[in-house]
Image (cartoon, rainbow, N blue to C red; front, side, top):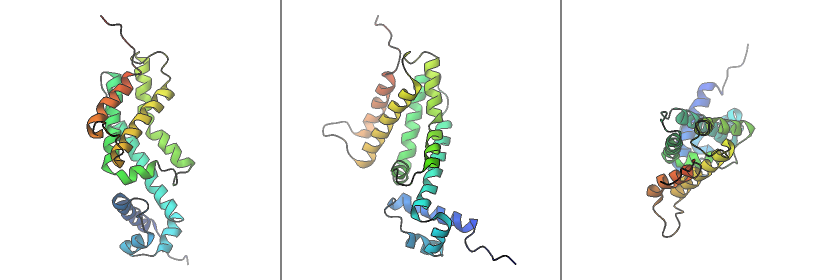
Length: 199
């Protein structure tokens, strides 16, 4: 007769749900396995049995976060102007990050990521890649705008601005990052636009 499953899928999901709440509230460093196990009514042994330990648990949450980011970006309504689509995607990216700052930090910390996580990260940015390709194909962007380079540049601006806002690293004398986000993002997009001759 087979032995009953002690650590089943139902327990796995309860652990993930509560771990997500703890990570959101306290960050990765504040995610205590003892607290988690106690809250769920199990032991830390269950966490190790189901996830291999804290890194595996965090990776599970981060992987889901990349999937959600992909869904968020894919759900941004199409804009008539392809460049405006890039701005709208940037705004959606920022909103998602600000909704769960600790999870956002974990997503780009790197310590909990493996090859599978990085593949999910790339998939999450597929809507941004598609929008850049559309903008180039419709000749809104310069002819030398290689999509991979444009995506890298825009993501660097997005990630930098969001990180500055989350961690209050605004340079002295600079605009509040809340007010400065949109103009900085638009400047990054406009830098790739086809430049029209002045009248």
